[in-house]
Image (cartoon, rainbow, N blue to C red; front, side, top):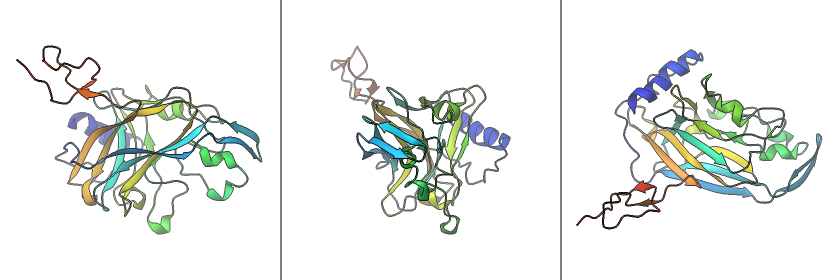
Length: 262
């Protein structure tokens, strides 16, 4: 786990001209403690027809959903959602993702003052660490950064530009990729509601996937975990997967340690 993740953080981020602080490259990585997870919140269902300055957008049958990483402590910090061949991240729809012409792969450039003129921008699909729009620097917020390899341009697949439909996110190549924030950026802190927004997705299909996340417990870069969380159609079915066991479950996709033997 460490070799792939460290290669991603150090090699990729440095190559893209980003200086990752020492606390970002945490040590003693471990699985998630009890209480952490991912939840999906429905923002709007069957959005309908929207009329704006760029014309009419028909989002009939589309739903807008937000994916949150749920925390245990108000000071917990969501550092990144990443993936590689060993610990992949997938975010899928059975159709495609809606993207507004003025939107982006992240909400870094989305100004809520434009929503009245461009109502479809409200429902743009994007990935994030806590941000819903342009960061408030006075509040300690900062842009969400993304990295991708040349062999797997996942941000381009997800957000091709020009308002074109977006494809599924698959960060599963040998080099890896991520979206992330630097420790200390206010938008990555859990806060009183004990959750951090990881993305907004508008689609007329079924949403599901798995996120490989890195969290600094109470914001301490030396006390972290990295683990995979599933949601929606990507969620595994727990059970006994050993066909030699007495209680083998052929519908199970993830062994939960419950196998019993004669």
